[in-house]
Image (cartoon, rainbow, N blue to C red; front, side, top):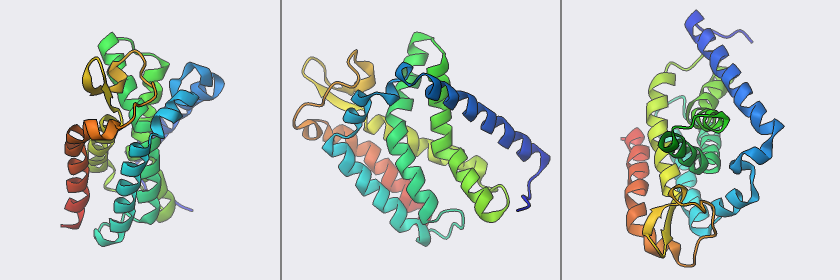
Length: 208
């Protein structure tokens, strides 16, 4: 297949491909150094209310894709971007917050940036490049639009209730991945609604 791309886009593709390879190689070489690879993170992610809200958001994204009039949005990219966001956004958003707060930028920071960009942008770019034979002209606006949803998702699925502090973000606690207490969603629902409404408005805006 011949790809129709400007020289600048070839450079951009090469740069983000190399960045991704370096970031992911660190995870593959030493998975125990990254909490995203821990069983505790996946237990944290699989809380019933998180799975339920993810299912609703993913069904909405996939169902609405053919009705947006956007030729770059189909069942495939709507599906894999939703799954990647659920799997990585809570960890990436929390890790970047901790990196900024501690002023400690290391390989975990690099992986968090890579997972954010790959989930919200680069996977979309690569899929459309392979599907259509050209780099999508929407690659730049998609970064901003999808990053808003990605960040919102990361914050939503980090919401928690702690007896000592009330509603908080899990990544602000020492025991970030501690098991959620029973009835957590009832305690955080009013804080979760703004993030859920933002996602719903963003999705429906494509149709309108």
